Image (tube, rainbow, N blue to C red; front, side):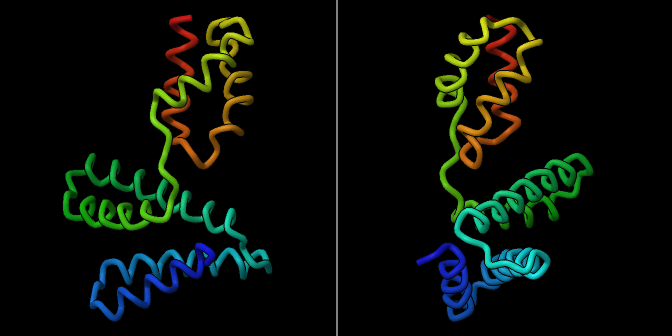
Length: 149
């Protein structure tokens, strides 16, 4: 079963169960997927659907930070709920230790030339962690490695 089919099935199950939060979130995700398919005149494969979900999760994280900064806790709570539902369909994200294990050999390869090597290290590391790790966390781990190395 494809990820898109899983989203549709889960939305139908949420409708039957009367779970309006899940139903609305899944409906929004399917609409975002459909919008990209219509715009690009193509059928998204598993990786394309995964990309849409990752983008939606990132938007939720940014909104949560903005709402919390503006003391809008009720709006932040809604975004957190949507993010939790979206994350059910995303692969488990890598932690800082896992990223460090991948980044350390790359930093060593470039001789840890300080922050000047940041672009080179990130360029080589990001394809390995794309979709598996948060870009900000990767940036932070690489920055620490370069500063300490």
